[in-house]
Image (tube, one colour):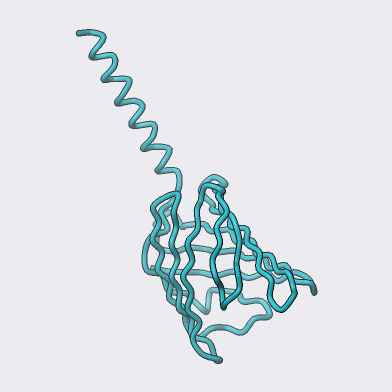
Length: 156
């Protein structure tokens, strides 16, 4: 009987540890709107608006976005993994390869794409606010001419 109680207590402690570890990673799920005024686009043109829907069941993350630019709409569907596995998506007809991994509560995405013979690498750092109502994406884009830095502020 005592052995059964001890085993049950150990199982409960193990389950609580797993739940606590999972809680350390934020859930990015939700419908997000880009706050154009709080964001910094660097040398790129500001979009009129952007809407993003994220479905996040770690380690899988699906991102659907629609941005309205002065040149028209840009729509994308991306699927990635947060456990370091390589993912491949199509972006404007080009193959985008990358990986994503956790650094504490920050998700770091590293992606590469070749556009018209130019190799471009993008690093994004996603951080969710404590209240879960805003998502900050710091972006560094390396192009042959140098580096571009951007900051996107998304709000629920």
